[in-house]
Structure formats: structure tokens, C-alpha cells
Image 1: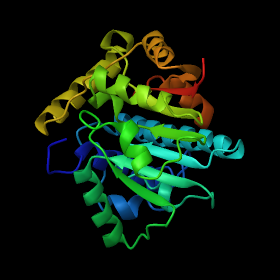
Image 2: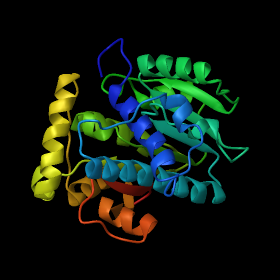
Image 3: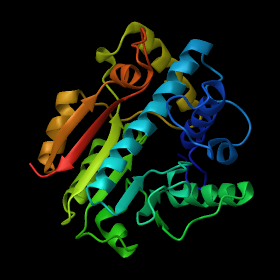
Image 4: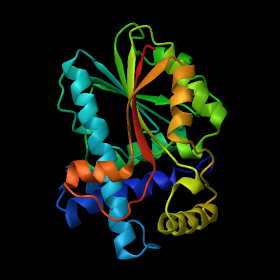
Length: 274
């Protein structure tokens, strides 16, 4: 993103979630606030209809996967969730867990933009929400979170979607190291981009067009990992992989079928401790 401007990729993701509510009737992921915060207009205008549908379903599925995992963590005793790179995510404003505190972490410019959109849409900010302004490339997450009121001695669940591909490997490692220092324990879900050699020719064509569009707005994918590489990085920061989920497996899980191709990064669920 550009300093002084909100994240355009966050805007695009919000529009994909909103489009899913209308075009697939929220079959994978229900978000009644998606259109209100995203506004009018559809995402992925540079893609053909099939590619847009695949991307919509992936973005819906990754949100569904993360929030299902969060629900399991809350049932097991987690009372805090940190949404890293929250963008226009709406979980905090439809949170079904009365005792769950939500810490939204994002660049201050994006947070200011989001709060303006929330106000314009008439979406109330619950008392359970805390905004934590952080630039992942420069700010210390381990200082920002407790300063905002996070109880580092109690279990924390972390949702980190659509962010790591835009960060350097050092920034990703620093974030994992900060989360690995939480005394009360941490579980998280995040997504990551695969190396170009690990995707199909069709996915490579979509990726090339995506990269061209990102370059036009001053953004680009920076970091990519193999599943083994992400497992090693997590292990180095005291996390163990619970599940590493390809996008195709998400489609099978939530749609009951496997499409010939799908778009988007891969998801991983990890837990602190060994």
C-alpha cells in the first residue's frame, strides 16, 4: 500500500466477499455486512467470469476456515482474537461470542479509512473492539499488542489473511516471533503464496495478470513459500503445524467437489508449542 492511502487489495477482498453473498448467496461464508462496508461495484473486473468465481470462492472459503477454527478455539477457552491486517474484515462487528475481545491490527491509514466506511454504513463499533495501528515492516507487534490491552498471559487466536504475500520474509518472521512470545499460548490461521513453479499453467496466467494489476497500483507479491518452507519457518518460531490446506482442498471441504483449478494462496493452521 501507499503511505497516506488505504490498502486497495483490502478493498478488493471486501468486494469479493460481498459479491459472494449475492452471486452464490453466501453458500460458503455468510457475511451480512460485506456489501455495506465494501460499497457498490464488483471485484476482479480484469478476470474472466470463471476466474472471478474461483477467486470469490477462495476468499469466502479462507474466511470460513479461519472463523470455524476461531470458534473451536473459543470453545476451548480463548477469549481474545487478533486480526492481523484486518482491512475491511467484518468479524468484529458480527462477533457471535459475547466474551471475545477483538484486536484489529492494521496500518493506521487503512484503519482510518475503515472507520470512515463503518460510520458511513451505519455499522456500530462494539466495545469489544480495539484498534491497534501497526506497520508490519517497521513497528514492534510484541509492544503494540500489550500496549493496546491484549492479555499476553491468556490464550490468543490470530487470523492473518491476505497479508503475508505483501511482506518481506523478515517481517513475517518478526511477526511470528512476536506471536511466539505470548505466554498464554497462541493459535493462528494465515495464508501464504506458493512459488510459481508449484502452480498450474492456468494459475500462472491468472497470477501474471494479477501481478500486472498490482504493479499499476504500486503493490506486488513479495514472499512465497513451499509448504515445507512454511512449516520450517513456523517451527523456528516455536509453532507446530496443525493443518496445511491447499485451496483445492478448501473447495472440496465447503463445496463438496474439487474444481479443475482454483485461485489464491494456501492456508495453514498452527499452534504454539513444539
